[in-house]
Amino acid sequence: MSDPGADPISRVLETVANAAPEIRSGLAGRRRKADEQNPSGETQLAADVWADELLEDRLTALDGVGQFASEEREGVVDAGEGYAVAIDPLDGSSNLKSNNSMGTIVGVYDDDLPARGRELVGAAYVLYGPITTMVVARDGAVTEYVLEGADGELADRRAVREDLSLPDEPVVYGFGGRVPDWTDRFADYAGEIERELKLRYGGAMIGDVNQVVTYGGVFGYPELDSRPEGKLRLQFEANPIAYIVESAGGASSDGSGSILDADADELHQRTPVYVGNEGLVDRLESAFE
Ligand code: P6P
Image (cartoon, rainbow, N blue to C red; front, side, top):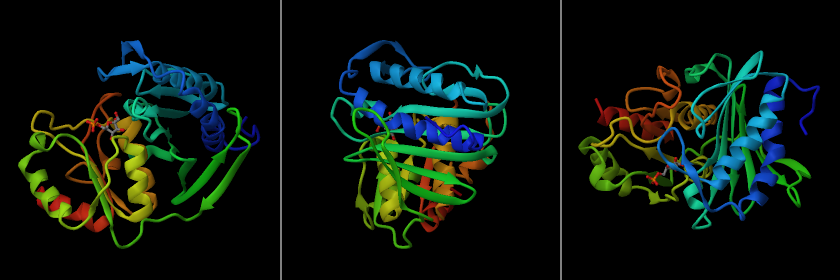
């Protein structure tokens, strides 16, 4: 398990890393639908519920964790004194049926939840791809690890990219939602980008964001005519990813400014999300003026 002597933020991140091989090995048998919906009204899979309970159990047991919240549960769990941990235990779990990439997202806030992204003191995502990797942002630095473990045990956490930063030249883009649902101003922006970059959209934010972090480009789940606030959750998805991408030299926006400056009013509030190379995000904000 995590090193008890480490600081609380490290202990949270190590606990998520240690759980990753076990979560990965537990997915195959948990593809069935659960009987519940999450607070966002999305049908849960058995894997969603199981990963959420596993991580809640381990993270709330840590000294230095005072609150726990998850995309999969209604309220904030009181865990004593310390940092607030917000997770998306299985981001993109709808990809489980089609056997495509998924992820786990974690944000460590130095404030009660719901909290603004500026209160983050650490964030990470695990990507369950052909291999299991974890991208961690702390103190302005981003590191990618390979997490290797047989039979659900973490045998090795090996840094493979340190001081990770987005390449200067963007290559890929990925935009969520249905094209007819896009607002005109986003559709105009997307029309420009589509003629410049290569489409990489896999339906799980972590897989798509990792493409942008690796190759340079832009990911967005935009404002929609039917839902101006978009789909993605501020506490569990948008803030941690914005923190990571901005720590890697990129930019984030909710359409008007950095996602990290967005007011946090409700635990499950949604926000439009645009992250990637600064120039591409700037162009989006200019198109929205
Ligand atoms: P759509 C997964 O459910 C998720 O929350 C993100 O990981 C992903 O970017 C988005 O929703 C996909 O949504 O509408 O394309 O299925």
